[in-house]
Each structure stands twice: as structure tokens, then as C-alpha cells.
Length: 497
Image (cartoon, rainbow, N blue to C red; front, side, top):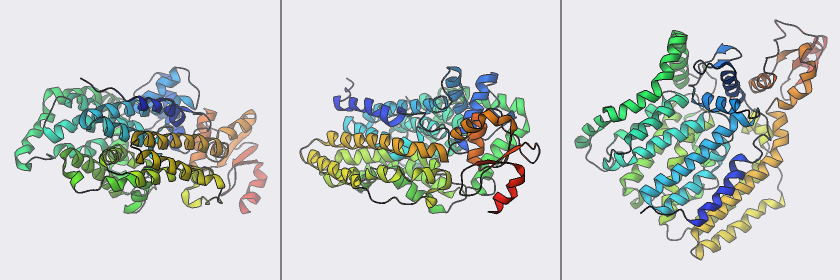
């Protein structure tokens, strides 16, 4: 008989609203990626061409179509310019958390599943990526679902869920290309079994009941896009955005050192990072299922660390494995009071990050200044004391949910404090509202990529380049300043300053 969901876990439902859906349109679309993907999805919805991604009327082959389809459906439903790109991703985040609890409960029991779900759903990386209309979370949800559905096969050769795993893997390939086919390599290793005797079992992946669902889901878009766009699609999508992206920084200019993701992982698991001390015990890792989770985590970390081009969100696919390991460690710990209290204390990160975001998002964390101390930074210490007492009185789930509630409160606070300035510095929404009445007389001299793509999204029809189509008013953003309008005669003087 299936185990019932604990009553306390239902408290996560209102928390989910504040974590993922509250004030979704508070900030306009930001950065170069979010408005660019939203523009493509909006174009698909308007044109009815769901095969060829187009940005400003031109084919754009950087990513496959899954995110565009999700967002395009939201545009077709009449949702607003901020909600349409973001709501499908937030819904995918919540749907995956429900699945995540179910599959972990099936494999490990109710307590580890409950802890792991709370940890993943309130980790900083999951919260941030679930509210941005980019493909990293859809990739993570579909890829992780495939890995978890195939876990019974990888650890005890139970093939019943492999067809469903194949469908999820196909969706992952539709979310972000061929990368998931590399990241599933832990499924081929016989965890807990002799290696030589078990390799032949992997031919099960070629059986019709497994391979056909994968091909039926994944092939139509790739075949149709190739037929319509020919070798240009193959060259740009497969060569430039797979091979060159991995080996050359010149392609995307996102080159970073090999160790770049180590602090990103620690920050992405906040406020739960201290629980790593519970998941790194030798006896804990004797279980093949946990070794599989660890192999999943390490492969994602090593693969993306080996890539020359690195962005923080690339590492998101390891968070479900990390949260599962932390949840298992917490469920089996004798005394977790110091660890949970440390997690509660780290909720201060939300208060510290709030005033830093408006400068960190458009310019990078190195350009953000640490804010002066505020007395309310001490409030997480009071929560830490309460969590300590709950754990000592045998109420571990209540302690975990208290920290989760603190993360939800921190998310709301962060949005309220950072959103107005973030909307002005990282999005062109306010800029477009200001210049829209005079748009016919404006051309663009120079804008940063993020501002340019965001402005193109809100204007729908991109403003012309001053070099090719001069206008009476020029729009220019000097380094370190806000965009400004000026007559052409004054541009050289302003730039010189």
C-alpha cells in the first residue's frame, strides 16, 4: 500500500507560491538570454511555425525547441510579456518537485524524500533558475527525471521504468541538445554488480520498448528542422553550439577556470550547504543507489568544468542528485542540530544578496559591493535557535520546514528590495516605456548585449542601428552609466567624458 504524504509536507504548497510565483512580473526580462528566448517563442506563437526558431525574423539555432514550445503555448494563452516566458518554467519546477518526492519515496522512504524535496525546492540555485525563462531548468527537470526513473535499472537491473526514462531523456535532448546523452553515462555502469558480468545488460537500451519511445519523441523536430534549414542548421547547432562551445572560448566568450563551479555549487545549495557533512560518510556510500547519485553529481561537475565556456546555471543538473544525498544523510543522522542550525543561520544570504543583485546581475558579482551591516541580519540566528530546539525535541521535519519557510520569506524580501533597481539596471522594460513615444525618431549607437536584447523584446521591432539608419535621436550607454538619449552632434563629446 502506497505511503501517504505527511501532513506537514502540505505546508510546502503555500510556500511554493512565494518561492516560485509571487511577483513573477516584478522585474522585466533580464540579460541577453531570457528576452532572446522569449522573442523566439513569441515569434513561433505568432507565426505558427513551431519548427524553425527565429530571432528578429532570422533563423536562430542556438537551442532546440522545447523551451520555445512551452513559452509559445503561454503566449498563445494570452499571458503577459513577463509571465508567458516564466510561468512554464516555474510550473516545470513545481511539477518536478512533486515527481521527485514520489520517486525518492518509492526508492528510499518518506523521510528522505521529504527532506530532499524541501532541500531542492528551497535551494538558491533552484529558486533562481525556476523564475527565469531559460532552458536550464527544463533540461534539469527532464534529465533528472530520466536518471531517477532509470535508477532501479542502474542499481538492481529492474527495467520496468526504462520506457518512461527514455521519454524523459528525449525531452532533455529537446531542451538543450546532445549534452544529456553524455550526462546519462552513469546509467551504463553496473553499480553494485561485477563490471564484466553486467556490461551486456546495457543492450536493453537498444530494445524496441526503450529506444522507440526515445526516437518517436526526439526525432521529429530535429529531422524537420534539418529538412527546412539544411546544412546551416547542422553547422550552427551541432558544430558551433556543441563542439566549439565546449573547446573554445572564442565562440561565446564565457571562458572560466576549471575550478569555477566549485563555489557555484556551494552557493547553489544555500542555505543547505552545511548538510554536506552528513552525506560524506564512508558507510553511507556503500549503498549502490547512493553511489549512483554521487556518480551523477560528479559527472555533471567534471563535464561542465572541463568545458571552456562556463555559465553558473549550467551546473543546475547536479542539484537534484546533491539534494537527494543531503536528504538521505539528514534522514539517517543521529543528531543534526548543529547542521540544521547552520542552515538556518545561512538564510542571512538572502538579506545580504538583496542590495547586491542590481549591480551583480548586469555586471557580475565582482562588481557588486558588500552592503553595510544591518541589524535584521541577526534574525536568522533566532530561527537557528528555534531549529536547534525542534531537532533536539525530535521534530526534524518541523525544523526542516521552518528553514524552508525562512527561504520563502527571504525570497519575498529579496524581490521586494532588489526588484525596483534590478528592473532599471538589468532590464530594458522601463527604458522602453520611456522612449516608446519617440521610438520612430531613435536609433541605437551602442548598448550592452543584455540591454540590447531586452529592448528588442519590448519594442517587438528592433530599433535601427545608427551606423546604417541615422535618426534625430541616438541611444547610447556609456560604460558604468544608464542608457541616455542624445543628439548625434553631442555623442562624441559624451563618449569622450
